[in-house]
Length: 535
Image 1 (spheres, rainbow, N blue to C red):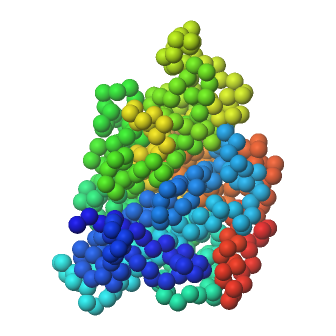
Image 2: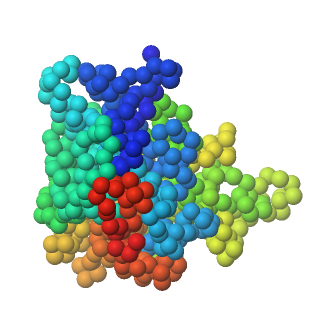
């Protein structure tokens, strides 16, 4: 029998989502399984685990899904208006986030809250139902700890969003059947500590060998990577150092410094190989990836045309220039919603592999086969201010290039998505060293990443937190959620003012956090919340 999983959203404070609901619906809507039906055996927990993964994949989902609707720019809202990029195409959705006219009624501010608490609700069900005494475990009663570890990993991942974006939020461990209007805000420090406890549990019971985990399944090392970040958040820098070294010194991962994967015989380099289609998972030879979201095109459990539009954010709408047509060679059908700032693109040395033509596209050549453009064909297009200001053409990264030759207007970005990789673990380690005043060790750690990039090495005299943030931008642009990084390091406002010519003049100190959604405040009438400062 074929089953499609629909997951309880479990949005805090919204009446229709406050009960337990139905976790699993058959494709025939006339029949269904309740949560009590599913969570009775190992097989049921496997179904629920796959549902948890499916919900997590909705992180940057756009439209056309019956579970959660977010709109087209939910990824971009976490990148724009900071120190690395500004709007190209003037999408009105992003104007709030670039011009800092944020208010509690903005849909995208609600969407992040909605998705995160939905993931928490699903995780809580798995954690709590695993404690039922009558579950038919296939191997042993201890099997329940594996599924609880899965739930606690994803609960931690969801609270990562809530803590960085909203500050104090409610710590929730159950899905209640009765509608509540009296949730209290848990202090941010307390929530961080509880997330750490979740991850410390998860590392004990998630699979240790990443090659034994199915694609998309978080292993012990994914939990350790996330735990490193939360130790830093909690200012436990020695613990973060220890955990990061544990990952780095394991036998499972390495920085990729040689060509590999399914595109080995195509033009490219070892850095660009990590972001090419079918190259994200360990099965391709990519030993740098620690946790990868599965989103391949036309695969069961993968992505679709609405699951992720990251490509449309970074790839310009070059095809709107006469003499150009949509091409997979130029990254597919982009929208040019955000473009990297010049300081970042200019900060790479010439020889830096991350600066190669395979990783940053700086040149565009007319490619239309139409006869009327034959005089332009294969000639270089000189990028104009109009191109840049409208998102039609500008230098940009290629990490999110994606296209389908048989459907050039395909909207989605159906490649797998690397969420955690070893280069970031090194940079977490460097951050922990810097915060302890261990500049020598921090410099040596940063230089491991820079040596892999084939660029000049940093010196102790220049390494500080800002240098580290520059290096994170060079290495992880587009991959890291930049807002989270700047919020954690308390550099969000300072660096936006320094580097962003549009957002810098208007950002205020309180913009380090978003407002709590107004719908949430209104619904929680039993305990009236004050919104975050400034809103």
